[in-house]
Amino acid sequence: MNMLILTYEYKLEPTPEQIEYIENTLDVCRSVWNFALQERKDWCKSRKSPVNTCSIEREYIMSVDEPFPNYHRQAKLLTNAKKDNEFLKSANAQVLQQTLRTLDRAWDDMKNRGFGFPRFKNRYRMRSFVFPQLNKNPISDKSIKLPGLKEVKWRMSRSIPDGFVPKQARIVRKASGYFVMLSLSLDVNVPNPLPHGHPKGLDLGFDKFVATSDGEEIKRPRFLKTLQYKLKLLSRRLKNKRVGSKNRHKLNQKIARLHQHISDTRKDWHFKLSHRLVKDAGMIFVEDINFVSWQRGMLSKSSADAGFGQFVNILEWVCWKTDTYFAKVDKNGTSQTCPNCGAHTGKKELEARIHQCHECQYTTTRDVAAGQEVRNRGLSALGHSVLENVCGLRATGNIDHDALVGGERSRKLAS
Image (tube, rainbow, N blue to C red; front, side, top):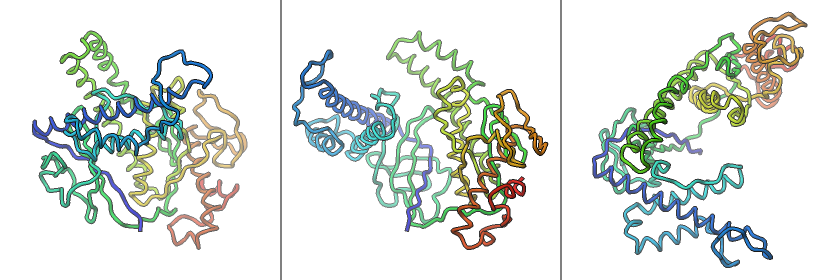
């Protein structure tokens, strides 16, 4: 039996006393994070110099037998520190332990996944904390019970699905207020969608945000660029405000609300577009692209504004939710291959927006041709994997059995 986990977000309406408790908890979590991170950095610095030379910088001198301050060691030290520290006592103990767990996970990601070094948190960077456990029946239509906060009023914008149990809650401070993100779990085995129905290939790009194999081209919206002038004016005013002043804090809040508006608008458009694309499709194929590399070139700002990575993640989730098969295919050479006959058309310059095959004279726009090639590669991959491992594709959907056979015949049938 597998565990299905959903995350629902709700707007909180806390009282002034509850807001004070939330802000105090964020301050305590920030102090614990910064102290634990500094402890790890000091341990690493004390061991970066060779044994026969001195460092040109100043570091703490630690014994060679001093163990690395991992999560278990720091959690034990935190428990001992809470006995005599009233500031640490004012926050929930499990919340502080989750802060150390988050730091430990960020440290492991830095070493194993090549992520950046964990940052120290100021009052604006520490925006959330987690209650890992909730009491029984904490949810009602008008409020939710949280440890230390008792009953907090909220806007129950959507009901909890039947059978799901709330396991943990994350309190998030945003520019527009306070939110709670509930993790709901259900013991159920949900199979992955099987290939069926109409196949659709998608090509993502800067000229057109999405071009489908059905010939549809969707223009790329400019979420950030439409409000960039307003952000620029506010940022100019910010540099004239004294650090730590109330006017600077108010202006920071105004800038944060504008950034949140941009982010929410982008995410909402991604969800609506994903539902629109899967509405008449049984299979969705996209290119397997590392979008992080797109944000390191001269088009990094446009790539971040479009949010390609977020869109693909949302599209995969919507496909799973609507029982639509989702798969990624090889991205290399999709614009250099004719989707009609499979001939290699050569490398195209970015200015060339029309695909015209010199073998079969098939002509269409460059992005649509790439989407059709993505669809053909997805079907070819299914023809090699599904036909060998599944007893009959006719039972899984309405797709033509012959269209899933690889080779040149597959390309002609798929087009």
